[in-house]
Length: 300
Image 1 (cartoon, helix red, strand yellow):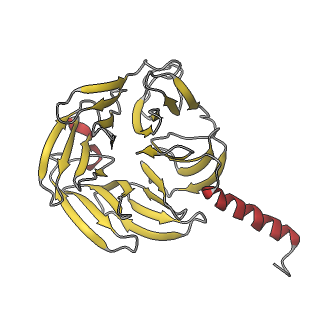
Image 2 (cartoon, rainbow, N blue to C red):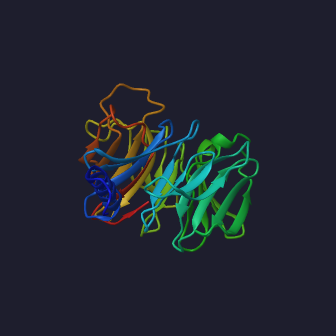
Image 3 (tube, helix red, strand yellow):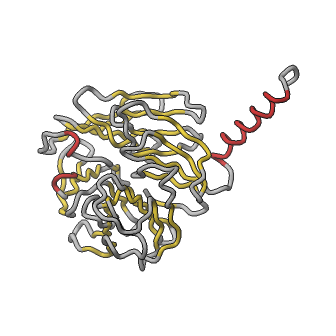
């Protein structure tokens, strides 16, 4: 760094420390949400460590930090992978008249995209941008925004698609054939397949989160609007199950209908006791997706 002014050296060191913060032992979280024009990384207290500005009319309902520190996110008009310095590494642009609300990573390390439209599509890409698969879905819903938000690929290679306006989860095989329809009620935003093979399903405007047996439709566990002390559930968006059995809930407030005390994000135990919550509405926006990097493994 010879020849570089000392003030510049200090600035560069600070930036490097922030970037490397992605991989240290300090608990951090990536967060974003529909109606919020940023993606941010915070510590567990909600202090912002990094922020990425979204373009006009974009909304982010899924964000993931990759193993190399890059960030994959869906933004309604497409999906991107960016570096911590905001450089675009990979990008997919959704065609006009469609919405792209789901972008995740498969166990093989590929990018799984869910595109709402007529027809709707499931697509898989390699990190190098090669398209591996494209499945065409008939959701029976004409309005793209009412079709789905988050999709998942299972360990057995099938695809789970929560259908917003039908209160159902559709499971497709690797060729796009509909295997089963499971009634879950509410407005299913996302789901997690648990080790028991039960599903943890976020039910959006039903103000409800359920663990359900997909074979019998039996509700094994649930949290409803006023079950959590001091936190009224609004639109239940992404929910994450930690290895200790706790659950993190994104409590999206874009359709808020009550004035009860609440939080943007809350962690609860199996008895709905509050372990931790995030309430800073002055500095944070509406949160519908979170990728926590804590000392516990988790399913999302």
